Image (cartoon, rainbow, N blue to C red; front, side, top):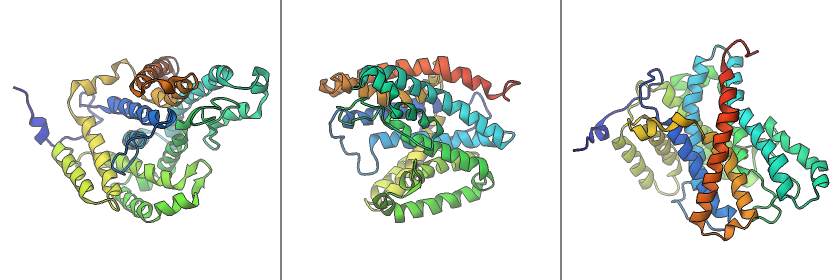
Length: 355
């Protein structure tokens, strides 16, 4: 007879215990996979099915990423010896794989998919400007003549638009740790951000408000709330009870809140459920990352792989076949990225070679 006692248990997340359940690798991979799935409809010219008005499928995947990031990056900031040490570790996590996917896009994908002559493609200023994505200050989705006839024309990698928001969260945590790493202050930040987003969010979208050219205010605050919820969960981890019953209650409250007010409880319910799943003692979750953490590579490569499939007629395939082929190709690219690029660079987080 199966043991269902976990349904009644109050779980706690404890990163200090290496033997404690930790399903973050599995959750990140799941999040990257549903971003790929969510993009499958618009990139193949189809209409995505509705999800109750709270978010898109890809939006849910990105939100899960930000919750997990808020929890783990807060732990990293607390353990770091200095701001420089903290940012050094963040750069090693983000930049090498991003450089790799940019190189693949410019020197492999671009030449075979562009409508321009090869010389004109490499001489085009937009080709050189594509590497500006590495700075996070000027995100450019296009390469000259690449995917010009796709349903989303000239968009080589539309997923990278969220990276500047992620980096901005790192910077806020680096310079504002006195505010964001305090148990009570972070709750105040979350409440203020939620009120502002609920009250002014639609106005920000209508006016095209930006904190910076790559930081749309609406989405920066939205995903910033998810990040802050993850950070708060880390700070309150010893007092935060995680149980399936409480998760169900949060989703019921979300459903009962109605269309005007349901988005805020949805944020809390999604963040809570993400952390709950991360702590459940299921071997399928806790052992998932033994062969590597492919989630970031999945996120970076999915969009260009999907666009390449459409470029070569993949939109005419039945959607399940298109999704499966794109998933397998993306997983292969992500595995290469992890074993050849990400893992070797992550080993440089400490040691005499840091300088």
